[in-house]
Length: 222
Image (cartoon, rainbow, N blue to C red; front, side):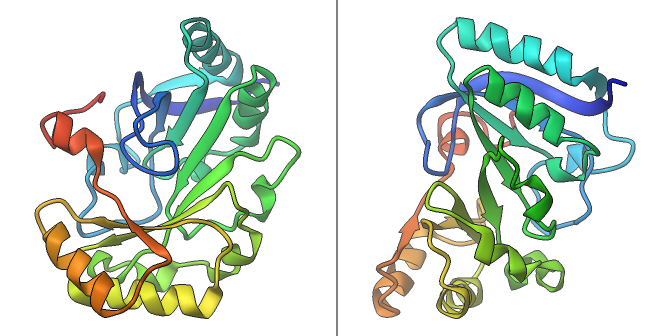
């Protein structure tokens, strides 16, 4: 039996953030999300009625194979929240078999254990800070599963958020890169830099979303 997945869009662009920022990637955006962050920038893809196409893992593999043939080796799986797609490990297996380097952007509320298979992707895991309104949903057991190729991303909309990121890192000590990313239009990156200096946050990296600098911040498919 072939399962289907709710694919909202797919396109090739640069990674706007994370460890592969600036590198070309195939983006696979899946519809649906279990959270509703106050500052979500892809809310159009989060509802149960989000526009999407029902596709099989074979169809996704064909999309990825075409990208690979044109020199693309990275895949960014995003949403919404892609890990809410039933049987999504089939997609990870298909991408792995093509030799693609797969990164999954996940919101921090989904237990990762079930996805730590032989075809395990790298995870860019958010930790939702106070301004998101979703911190109570964070599944902190995930920190113990992270590896060097993974990333923890703290999206900050306020000074309180930056300080909370420092607390979480000190408490859970994830063994992977830690990124601070400003909510676009909510906090000045210069202010975040000053807080990092003041708080001696040398283990963090400040990262701006390249795609929102290069293109219109509301433009899709980039």
